[in-house]
Image (cartoon, rainbow, N blue to C red):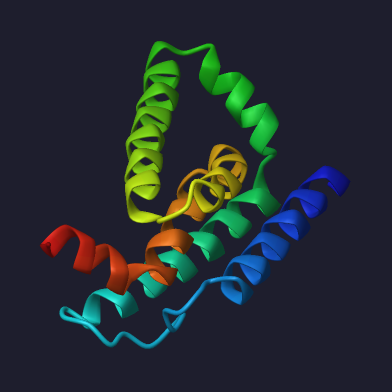
Length: 134
Protein backbone atom coordinates (compact mmCIF):
# COMPACT_ATOMS: atom_id res chain seq x y z
CA UNK A 1 0.00 0.00 0.00
CA UNK A 2 2.94 2.35 0.62
CA UNK A 3 4.03 2.06 -3.02
CA UNK A 4 0.50 2.95 -4.11
CA UNK A 5 0.50 6.07 -1.93
CA UNK A 6 3.95 7.06 -3.20
CA UNK A 7 2.84 6.72 -6.83
CA UNK A 8 -0.21 8.93 -6.21
CA UNK A 9 1.89 11.50 -4.32
CA UNK A 10 4.32 11.69 -7.25
CA UNK A 11 1.39 12.00 -9.65
CA UNK A 12 -0.23 14.87 -7.74
CA UNK A 13 3.12 16.68 -7.53
CA UNK A 14 3.34 16.29 -11.33
CA UNK A 15 -0.13 17.81 -11.71
CA UNK A 16 0.70 20.81 -9.51
CA UNK A 17 4.05 21.40 -11.25
CA UNK A 18 2.43 21.09 -14.69
CA UNK A 19 -0.27 23.63 -13.77
CA UNK A 20 2.24 26.08 -12.25
CA UNK A 21 4.64 25.90 -15.21
CA UNK A 22 1.92 25.74 -17.86
CA UNK A 23 3.06 28.86 -19.68
CA UNK A 24 0.82 31.58 -21.10
CA UNK A 25 -2.36 29.56 -21.62
CA UNK A 26 -4.96 29.71 -18.84
CA UNK A 27 -5.14 26.24 -17.33
CA UNK A 28 -8.95 26.10 -17.06
CA UNK A 29 -10.61 28.87 -19.08
CA UNK A 30 -10.57 28.52 -22.87
CA UNK A 31 -10.17 31.62 -25.02
CA UNK A 32 -10.11 29.96 -28.42
CA UNK A 33 -12.49 28.24 -30.79
CA UNK A 34 -14.31 25.12 -29.61
CA UNK A 35 -13.97 26.32 -26.01
CA UNK A 36 -16.27 23.59 -24.70
CA UNK A 37 -13.59 21.05 -25.63
CA UNK A 38 -11.29 22.29 -22.88
CA UNK A 39 -14.01 21.70 -20.29
CA UNK A 40 -14.64 18.23 -21.72
CA UNK A 41 -10.89 17.53 -21.51
CA UNK A 42 -10.82 18.61 -17.85
CA UNK A 43 -13.91 16.53 -17.09
CA UNK A 44 -12.33 13.48 -18.74
CA UNK A 45 -9.09 14.09 -16.82
CA UNK A 46 -10.87 14.40 -13.46
CA UNK A 47 -13.12 11.39 -14.09
CA UNK A 48 -10.25 9.19 -15.28
CA UNK A 49 -8.03 10.27 -12.38
CA UNK A 50 -10.83 9.54 -9.91
CA UNK A 51 -11.57 6.12 -11.38
CA UNK A 52 -7.87 5.28 -11.53
CA UNK A 53 -7.52 6.18 -7.87
CA UNK A 54 -10.58 4.07 -7.03
CA UNK A 55 -9.10 1.12 -8.94
CA UNK A 56 -5.80 1.53 -7.09
CA UNK A 57 -7.62 1.15 -3.77
CA UNK A 58 -9.18 -2.13 -4.93
CA UNK A 59 -6.29 -3.87 -6.70
CA UNK A 60 -2.53 -3.66 -7.03
CA UNK A 61 -1.49 -2.16 -10.36
CA UNK A 62 1.68 -4.26 -10.41
CA UNK A 63 -0.05 -7.59 -9.65
CA UNK A 64 -2.77 -6.84 -12.20
CA UNK A 65 -0.18 -5.90 -14.84
CA UNK A 66 1.77 -9.09 -14.11
CA UNK A 67 -1.42 -11.11 -14.62
CA UNK A 68 -2.32 -9.25 -17.82
CA UNK A 69 1.13 -9.75 -19.32
CA UNK A 70 0.60 -13.51 -19.17
CA UNK A 71 -2.37 -13.16 -21.55
CA UNK A 72 -2.06 -12.55 -25.30
CA UNK A 73 -4.73 -9.84 -25.22
CA UNK A 74 -3.15 -8.28 -22.16
CA UNK A 75 0.15 -7.89 -24.03
CA UNK A 76 -1.70 -6.57 -27.08
CA UNK A 77 -3.57 -3.98 -24.99
CA UNK A 78 -0.32 -2.86 -23.35
CA UNK A 79 1.40 -2.58 -26.73
CA UNK A 80 -1.52 -0.62 -28.14
CA UNK A 81 -1.45 1.73 -25.14
CA UNK A 82 2.21 2.57 -25.60
CA UNK A 83 1.94 2.90 -29.40
CA UNK A 84 -0.77 5.50 -28.78
CA UNK A 85 1.44 7.17 -26.19
CA UNK A 86 4.31 7.31 -28.69
CA UNK A 87 2.07 9.02 -31.25
CA UNK A 88 0.90 11.47 -28.61
CA UNK A 89 4.48 12.27 -27.59
CA UNK A 90 5.34 12.99 -31.24
CA UNK A 91 2.46 15.49 -31.25
CA UNK A 92 3.84 17.06 -28.05
CA UNK A 93 7.25 17.48 -29.72
CA UNK A 94 5.57 19.28 -32.64
CA UNK A 95 3.40 21.35 -30.28
CA UNK A 96 6.16 22.73 -28.08
CA UNK A 97 8.56 25.38 -29.34
CA UNK A 98 11.40 24.03 -27.20
CA UNK A 99 12.83 20.53 -26.93
CA UNK A 100 13.04 20.85 -23.13
CA UNK A 101 9.29 20.83 -22.39
CA UNK A 102 8.54 17.61 -24.31
CA UNK A 103 11.50 15.91 -22.68
CA UNK A 104 10.09 16.85 -19.27
CA UNK A 105 6.78 15.20 -20.25
CA UNK A 106 8.32 11.90 -21.44
CA UNK A 107 8.92 10.27 -18.05
CA UNK A 108 5.52 11.19 -16.56
CA UNK A 109 3.86 10.02 -19.79
CA UNK A 110 5.63 6.67 -19.64
CA UNK A 111 4.76 6.25 -15.96
CA UNK A 112 1.18 7.53 -15.94
CA UNK A 113 0.25 7.17 -19.65
CA UNK A 114 -3.31 8.46 -20.16
CA UNK A 115 -3.38 10.35 -16.88
CA UNK A 116 -0.47 12.43 -18.20
CA UNK A 117 -1.86 12.74 -21.73
CA UNK A 118 -5.26 13.93 -20.51
CA UNK A 119 -3.56 16.48 -18.24
CA UNK A 120 -1.45 17.76 -21.15
CA UNK A 121 -4.48 18.08 -23.44
CA UNK A 122 -6.52 19.86 -20.75
CA UNK A 123 -3.70 22.31 -20.00
CA UNK A 124 -2.76 23.03 -23.63
CA UNK A 125 -6.14 22.63 -25.32
CA UNK A 126 -6.34 26.07 -26.99
CA UNK A 127 -2.84 25.94 -28.45
CA UNK A 128 -3.33 22.32 -29.62
CA UNK A 129 -6.55 23.32 -31.42
CA UNK A 130 -4.76 26.32 -32.92
CA UNK A 131 -1.88 24.08 -34.10
CA UNK A 132 -4.29 21.58 -35.67
CA UNK A 133 -6.30 24.30 -37.40
CA UNK A 134 -3.29 26.00 -38.99
